[in-house]
Image 1 (cartoon, rainbow, N blue to C red):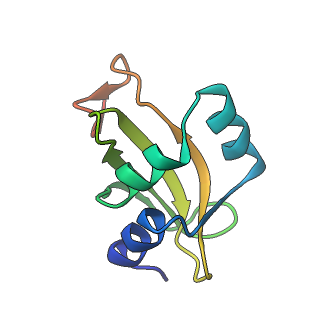
Image 2: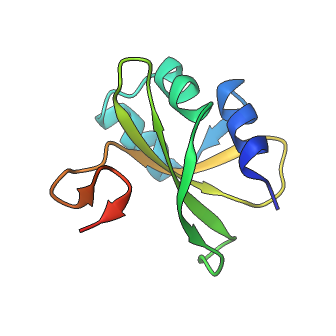
Length: 102
C-alpha cells in the first residue's frame, strides 16, 4: 500500500489521475491542477478507509498556497500514479477546522 509520503510526492509532482466522479467534481468546483499539486504536496490523513469498496482508501486534507482547504479521497492501492476518487472543499457546516466531522 502507498505511504503518505509517496502520495504527497506523487500529488506534488502531478502524478495523479481522476476517477470519473473526481473529474466531474474538479470541473464543477473549478479546482486547478496547480491547486491540487500545492495542496497535495503537504496533505495529512484525516480518515482511513481500509475496507473501502474497491480498494483501501483515505481522506486527506491539504491547503493551497492561497489557503484554500481541499479534501482528497485517494486509493491506497499500489500504482504508478495516485488515483483521486473525489476532491472537494470541506463544508464548514459539516467539518470542524476541516479535520473532524461535526
